[in-house]
Length: 305
Image (cartoon, rainbow, N blue to C red; front, side, top):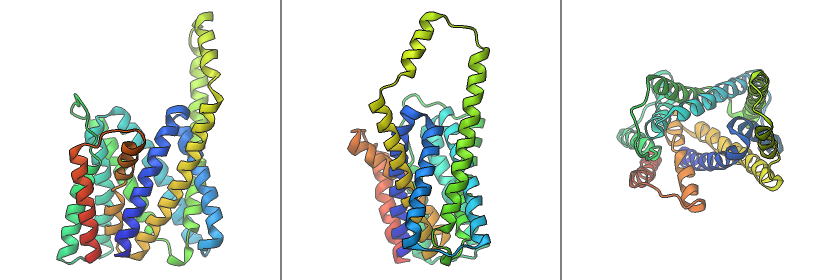
């Protein structure tokens, strides 16, 4: 029961972090917003260390660092596939793969076994993952082979994160997540620096657009400071909330089965769509309401199992 509660709570909180990160990315760009959030998450983990504690071992630091690399790859692939679209197909596909990968690992490699209620719970949860992650899109077209491959790759990477972090010892506390944040922040800031340099080189080699365009560029560069501060605050808040979600998900994995934690953890779009409905007054599609109801039913079945 504890695994179900912690994992589903972690998923909702993680979805809230995605919502905050999405708002920050509108002003800062996805890469910079994510990098800033990673640093905020690292500071949060360090602040939590005295409270949650944890033993520092080479093995746990290694697994934490590996999960940071895998997580950075997952984010890059996720943004790439969603940019190609259609989101209505690729988003739930990514969430489904992120649930199935650690579930298969836990049952085949980890020899996790479930009774009838557990099997039904996982089955209902997988259906809920697809429905909750569904993003209604008008005029959606069939996804390209590249989009499908990127979505599958992102889902596999997210699942790989779960598998890597599940190898850490209970006694390590949040130490692996500290290593995770150090690595992911380093990778993301390095990627942001590379993209910035590449963009600067391309801008230098481009033809001079003229004085009028230059004036417009100057006006664009002088962005409203208040809006920029808001974007930075959103990115920092995203990092704190994301760190909280990762702690909950890690505790969920350690409290029970990896398969259960991963399947319920894949419900993260629920937090995003609920906040979007409350804050931005976005409409929740009937299919997503059905997914949310099934998610609660699945959590109940898995808790009883």
